[in-house]
Length: 155
Image (tube, rainbow, N blue to C red; front, side, top):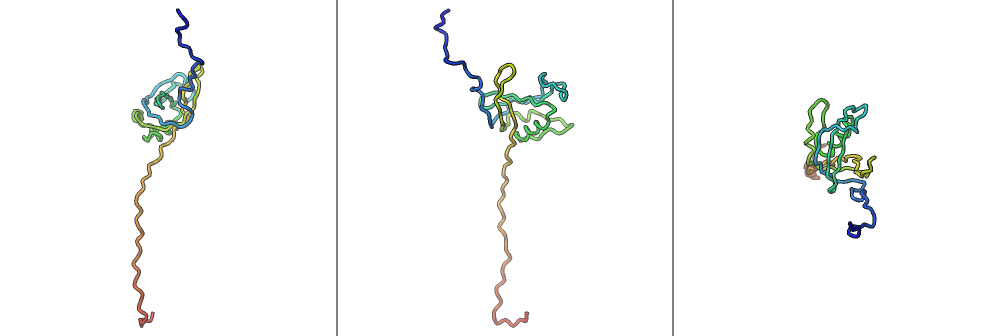
């Protein structure tokens, strides 16, 4: 083994430099499915059920697991994606999120195991499209011509 043939780098690579910066980003939803995550098990969610959403942000895969107990977060995602939110007691197809582009606010984070990842802080609701309609011009009543000066009408 010859050590001079090994690649040498001046400094170790910073994994945080490769992921998207903190702030707002456009993300394309690549996958949305119901899942169970052991790390999400809590008193409010004993099974760890969640909506597992995977997105592409500038070539970086971002995963966001939304626990079942956080229905407001699912509604926030739906508003950002422009799809109807789930209704209590009705079946809802999470597949309708796939392919949608959403605006997200992110934060760089490091897991307990030391892995750098992107945390989704919130979903930004899509701006409603302006439905401007032309304003109708005001119509005025026709003005009657002035009465002649030699008019002998008493009123």
